[in-house]
Length: 140
Image (cartoon, rainbow, N blue to C red; front, side, top):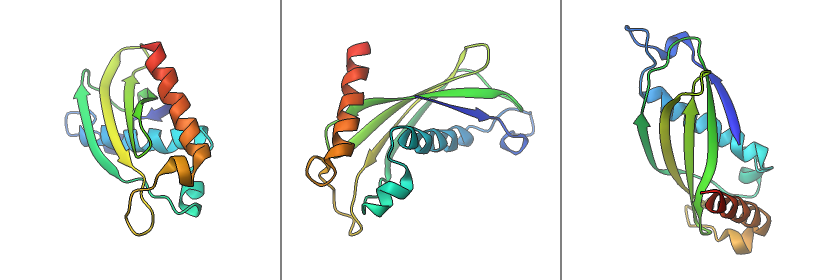
């Protein structure tokens, strides 16, 4: 699934290049949009008593970006086994050049901070993420 981010002026440094920390913010924007696209926006997750903190992020910067470029961020499910969700992000500029490859890992917790077994507590979300992980595995 894809998300488009327009580089904002305030995201650039004195050299006019996007500061590296902003790519992680873009990953979060793209992840929230991804969840909405699959029918599980944050309001629905939180209403179900599920929270999804970030466990890990990794970015490999390939090219610089500048204001006001549009960056297309493709989000895919790299791995999902029920408790942890591993996402991959490919960010490209308008010319189709990869500017950043990234990954993030997330847990699913209840309000007490305990892991949620989605297969039992939210089987619809479990099935959706499992199907997306299987599609991604098949496409590789």
